[in-house]
Image 1 (cartoon, rainbow, N blue to C red):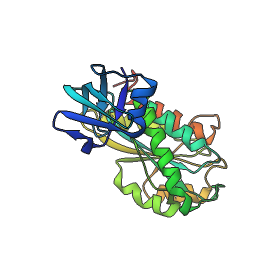
Image 2 (image 1 turned 120 degrees about the vertical axis):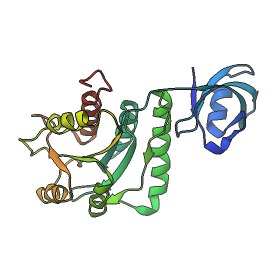
Image 3 (image 1 turned 180 degrees about the vertical axis):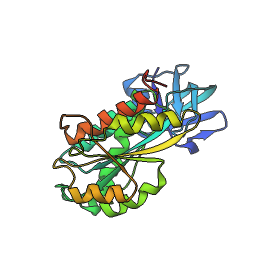
Length: 254
């Protein structure tokens, strides 16, 4: 059944109004008719089954007929901090990590970031990244849309580490501590509660040694992702899947 995310304000008592591109998608692409049923989410956890009451070019009205309970969100809140990669690679990271279960995305600029950051153009990119997260959340039957935040300088990213229960800094030169060594005991200690985790991934050229030292000094756990070197756009996906597996989200140990 088709799923749509709307703003909370579009819920009015037992009626939800779907606007813009989503309304056109229902009418033009899905050829929705009065009486058809869809799933509507407010992006913050509310999920309802709704029946179409009217279908217009720019607005669709649907009546809420059932509040639904879903368990598609991960028990651990895992955010992905990704150093801005070249081209459209961040779009791939956002799309795929949303499907896997990421809770938010934190783009940042590190020493070896090669992208020329232009704050004036960033609003359009943020809008596009947000749209990609929304569409991926709909496709993967999420009940929440991951937030895509404004890009941060590396020094500012370090200051956010204190906001998380665990910060996992993925570093290809770490040949001792590996991701599993960090995540397994952490997951086992959090069986009865929620937890927040930040996974930090570098750019195409990796992190400078100085950056890894600064991350450790700021409280991050420095860990490797195995014996192979992963691409910048692959590392976050691999780490996220491993974390959710170890926490029991994918048939792991819990």
